[in-house]
Length: 195
Ligand code: ATP
Ligand code: MG
Image (tube, rainbow, N blue to C red; front, side, top):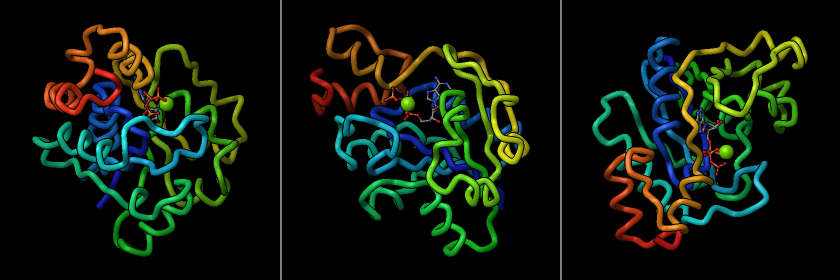
C-alpha cells in the first residue's frame, strides 16, 4: 500500500489540513492518509496549547467519516521531540510492505533543508508539497537532491492556520467552517484555547 503521512501539531486540526490530505490522496493515488500528531514538534518555539490526547481526539473527530483516513499516535506514544526521520524509520520496520509519502505545506517545503537527518529521510519518502497562501515554493532554491524528491500538488489556496483559529477563539470570533463542525463543538465543550 502507498501511504501518505499528514504530520502536524493539529492544535487544532483545520480544513486546510483536510483539503491538503484529500489533494494528495487523489493526485498521488494514495491508498490511505495517516494523520499523525507530533508530540513535541521540532521547529516550534511554544509547546502546543491542547494536550496530546485532545489533539488526537480532534483529529479523530475530523476524519471520522473518511474510509481512507486513519489517526496514528506513534509520535505521541514515543514521546519527546517528534523527528520525522525517527518516525519513518519505525514505520518502515513495522510495515515493510508499505511505501510512505510525506505531505507538507509550502512553509515546510522551504524548511526541509533544516529537518533532522534530511538526507537520509529524503531517500525514504517522497514529499508531496501543497501551496499555502503567504509562502512561495521556490524549488530552485533547494539543493538538487531534495528538489528531485518533492512532488508538487495543486490545492485551492486556503488562508487558514491553527494559529489564526486559536486567536479567533481568544477574540470570540467565529471558527465555523474553518474546522469541521465536530471539532468546533469539541473545542467549545472542552474550553481549550480559552473558548
Ligand atoms: P500553526 O499555525 O500552529 O503552525 P498550522 O496551521 O501551520 O498550525 P500545522 O499543524 O503546523 O498547522 O501544519 C501541519 C502541516 O499542514 C504542515 O505541513 C503545514 O504546512 C500544512 N498546512 C497547514 N495549514 C495549511 C494550509 N492552510 N494549506 C496548506 N497546507 C497547510
Ligand atoms: Mg504550522
